[in-house]
Image 1 (cartoon, helix red, strand yellow):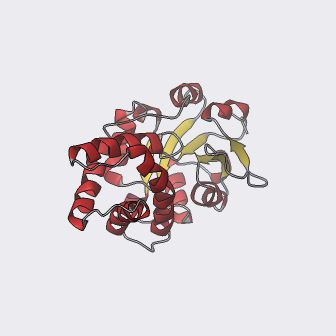
Image 2 (cartoon, helix red, strand yellow; image 1 turned 120 degrees about the vertical axis):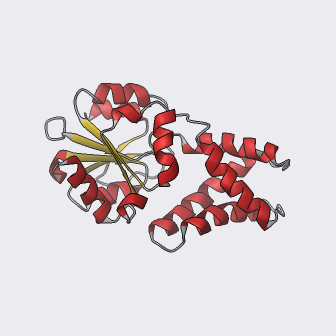
Length: 228
C-alpha cells in the first residue's frame, strides 16, 4: 500500500474528531444553561445509538436535516422517560450545533499520525456532517492545514456511501481511485462506499465492533503506520 497510494481521504466525525466526547461536553453545557436536571453522561449513552440510527436514515434520504436534529433529541429524552417540551427540544437542538465546536477533542494520536503522513501523502476530508460546522471543527481542533480538500455531502448534494460523492472527491483531488485510500469508522458509508468506486479502504474500528471479513481494520489511529 505504501507504494501504490498517493492520496488519503479521511472521514471526520468518529474517525479524527472525537464526536462522543465533544457531544457529552456540549450537552452538559446546554443542559446546565437551560436548567435541565439531566446527567450528560447518562444522556449520551442513550443518544449515541439513536444518533447513529438517525444518521443512517439521513444518508438514505429518509429523514431531513431538521428531522434528524429534532428526532435524535426527542427519542433520547423519551428513552430516559423525561418529559421535555417541543419548544425546548428545538432550542436545545440549535444550541447544540452552536456550542458543539466549543469542544474539539481529537482521538488519541491524531495529530501525530497526520504529521507522519503529511510528507508522504496528500490528504483530504470526505464528510457527511453539516457544512456549517465541519470546517470550523477542523480549524478549531488545529488540523485544517493538514488537508488539501474538504468534500462535504451538502455541497456535493449526495451523502456517503453514494458513489457520486467519492467520484467528486477524486475529481477534485485529481487522483485515480486505485491510488486513493479512504479511512473511516462506518463500514457502509466510508469503507464499502469507497470500495464501490475502486478505492482502497481501512476501517477505523474504535468501538471494537465485529471485524468485517476481508477489510483492513485498525483500532487506534496510530496503527496506520502499519500500512502507510
